[in-house]
Amino acid sequence: MPGGRLTQQERQQIALGLADGLAYAEIARRLDRPTSTVTREVMRNGGPTSYRADLAHRATERRAHRRRQAAPRDPKAPSSADGRDAEAVREFEETFTTVLMGSGMPKMMSRVMACLCMTDSGSLTASELAQRLQVSPASVSKAIAFLDSQGFVRREADEGRRERYVVDDDVWYRSMMASARSIAQVVDIARQGVGVLGPGTLASARMENVARFLDFVSESTARAAEQARAILHTRPETTSDSPTNPV
Image 1 (cartoon, rainbow, N blue to C red):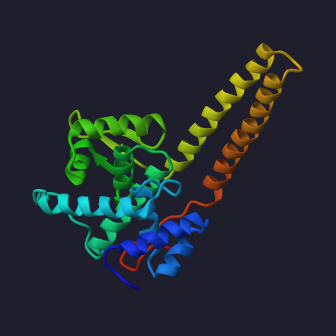
Image 2 (image 1 turned 60 degrees about the vertical axis):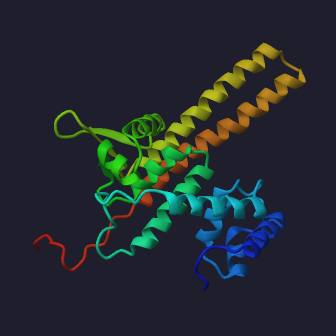
Image 3 (image 1 turned 180 degrees about the vertical axis):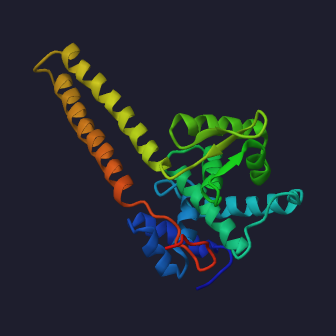
């Protein structure tokens, strides 16, 4: 499987694959590249509906030029944990961030979320996040406020007056339930609209269809989240070096 940066010809093949409606995995297979490479390339450069090979190639060249001119990374910034391929970890974090952005999450919020999810502890302080991401504390604070409002993180008291931000086992459950509640609010408003617009009108019928559809989605989302939390949660396997409970 070839490595290195994508060539302009490969980007043109990606654009053609998207135009033909191919999945990222199929485009990657034809290029003999990892699917994550194609996913990151597309999401970083406009998404599947706006990707253009020529613009993507120029943007990549500009980013590479800026990296060459940038100051060296802070030597105090923590490296990957022992036993992990640092480059593979960095590539995955970038891919994960890009996919979160593609789902609608803003860039800085996506970076903070990816960073938290990839720590074994699942928690970091604001200063630790700022150091790892090489951003200002204000940027971290704004990102955390958004993630907290969406149910993605929770806050814990740390030493002194500091806070620690946590992504735990229920993070995606809480986020899905928050989404279900938001959809349910739209359902309530749409049903109010049915009465305001009057029975038998096209606008009223449209609002009724909106309410029915979203009501089904909201209930299905909440039910699926409950079931998933109950049966799909996994924990790391105990290694031979880990202490075991006496029989």
